[in-house]
Length: 312
Length: 266
Ligand code: SF4
Ligand code: SF4
Ligand code: SF4
Image 1 (spheres, rainbow over the protein chains, first blue to last red):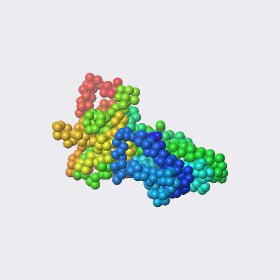
Image 2 (image 1 turned 90 degrees about the horizontal axis):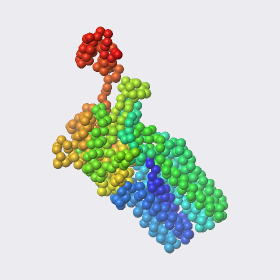
Image 3 (image 1 turned 45 degrees about the vertical axis):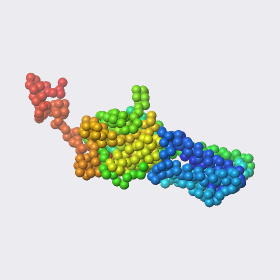
Image 4 (image 1 turned 180 degrees about the horizontal axis):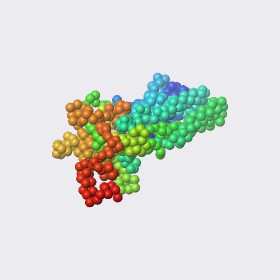
C-alpha cells in the first residue's frame, strides 16, 4: 500500500496527542503544574495538526464535512465524529487546568475513554479492510492503542522532567508502555508471512483448477491509480533495515534514555535525555507507520501477477 | 446512505465468458466512450500523447496463462492455455466499498442491486477502492472523485435510445458474445440459466463480498496432441493419405502432375 505522508503524520501525531490527553485525563499530572498546562496545549496541538494533515490526501476535500454522516457503517466516519466529540472534554479540561489550576476527575475519565475510542476507530479504518490481510487483525488496533499510550507517556515524562525538576515514576511507566506496545507490534509484524490470507491468484481468477496461473499481460502498459495506490510495496531487504531502525528509534533508544534519566532524576542530563527520548520515539513511530503501509499487500495485486508489483 | 439494503428486488449484473473472450479490449473502449460523456464527471486521461499515458477506466482486461502441473512454458504441456480476463465492478451483495464510505457517496440500490457513487457527495478519500478486492474502483486523477462501473445505469433504463441498446455498453459492443447482462436474482433468467449450465463462479469467494457478476470457466479442450488429423497437421506433414474434405481435394489436385512431391515438401 502506498505510504502517503499525510496519513502517516495523521496517525502518528493524533496517536501521541490522544495518548497524552488520556494520561492527563487519568490525572497523572497535577493541574497546578506547568507541565499539565503545557501538556494539554501540546495534546490539542498534536491532535489538530494530525487531523488537518489527514485532509491533505483527499481528492475532493470540499465534501469532507459529509464524512461525519455515515457513523452507522463506516469506521472513518466514526473516527471523524469521535475526534470532534473528544475535543469537547479535552478543551474544557485544558481550560480548567490552564486557567483555573483545576482538574475535573470524572471529565478526565470521559476524556481519556473518548481519546482511546478515537484511536481505536482510526485503527479500525485499517483493521476492517479485508483486502489487506496484514491489517485485518485485532493486533492492528492493539498496537495503535498501545503506541498511542506509549507516545503520550514518553511526552509526559519529558514535560515533567523539563518543568517540574523530576518526573517521578513516569519514566518507568513510559518504559513499560513502550515495551508492551512493541510486543504487540512484533506479533503483528510476524503476520507478514501470511501474505494475502486465503486469497491466491487461483481464487482471484477462479482458474486454479486448470493449473498454475501466471500473468501474461497487464491490462495497461503504464501505471494507474491501482498500481500506484495498492501496488506499492517496499523491497524486502529495505523493509528489514527500516524495521530495525524503527525498533531502535521507537523502542531501544528512548527506553535506555528514560532508564538513565530515571537514575539521574533532576539533573540537566535527565532533562536532555528525556527530550531526546521524545524526538527519537517520534522518528521511530514515523518509520513504523511508513512500514505499516509499505509492507502491506493488497489482494488486487493478485490480478497483476502478485510478484509483478513487488519491486518498487 | 452507506448501509447495505437487506435484499434487492433484482440483482442486475454481468456474466463473463472466459472461454469466448478474445481479449480485444473493445469493451474497454466502448465503456470509456460511453461513460466519459455520461454518468458523472469525465474519465480523464493523463499525458494521453506523452511518454507515460494513463487514464481512468471502469473495465480492464487482464491476460493470464495457465500451465498445468509439469509444464514450464505454454504448450509444453498439452492443456496449457491463455485466458483473457475482463474485470469491472461485480456489484457485490455484501459490498465493503459501500459500508466503508464515510460520506454516503457510495450506495447500493435496493431496486436492482447496482452499486453507484454519488459524485456530489464523494470526498475522494479512496477508502472504498482499498476495500475492493477486485480493483474495480479508480480515483479519477483530474476530478479527485471515485469512478466505477455503473452497469450503464443511464442506458439500461433509457427510453430515448433504441431498445436493442438498452444494455451495458460493453455487452452491446463485445464482438465475441463473451459478455451477458441480466438479472442474476431470477433463477429463470437467461443469465442465471447460463451460469447454472456452464458452472459460473465467483471471484475470490473467500473475501466474503458475494459478487453478483459471474464468470464462466474456459471449456474443456482436447489436448493439442489429439489433433493429428486436422487440416493444419495435414498441411504440414507428409501424412496426407487420409486427409479429407478441402485439404484432401487440394492434395489430390496438387499431386496430379507430380508423382514425387506433396504439399509441405519443398
Ligand atoms: S466489485 Fe468492488 S467496487 Fe464493485 S461492489 Fe464489489 S467491492 Fe464494491
Ligand atoms: S472515495 Fe468517495 S465514494 Fe469512496 S469511500 Fe471516499 S467518499 Fe466514499
Ligand atoms: S469485447 Fe468481448 S471479447 Fe473483447 S475483451 Fe471485451 S469481453 Fe473480451
